[in-house]
Amino acid sequence: FAHRWFGAGGITVAAAVVGFADAHAAVISVAEFSKSAVLLQPEAAVLAILLALTTNTVTKAVVSYSAGGFDFARQLWLVQALMLAATW
Picture 1 (tube, rainbow, N blue to C red):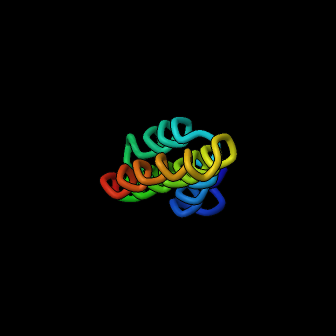
Picture 2: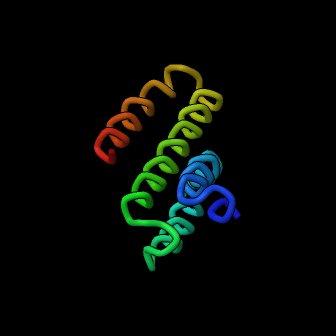
Picture 3: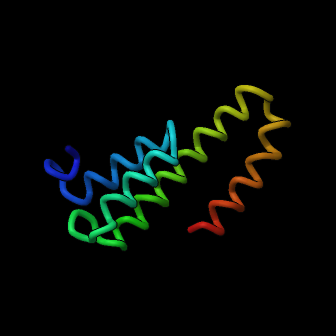
């Protein structure tokens, strides 16, 4: 649907939005789209996957703050930030 209406950019945006809920589903979908490099070029797939992982990390940061407060979340935020920096 996103590809038909919006092209590769639609897949990228959709992957980022879906990443807020579940990074695994977004990554698998993007990988399937890029498998033949017809619907999505590998470079665009990498960006879509990175955005899905980033938005999922934002969700985890919010949940960690909500569940454990600032002291708990602060410890996780540092590790999450380092993970994202290494991934990008």
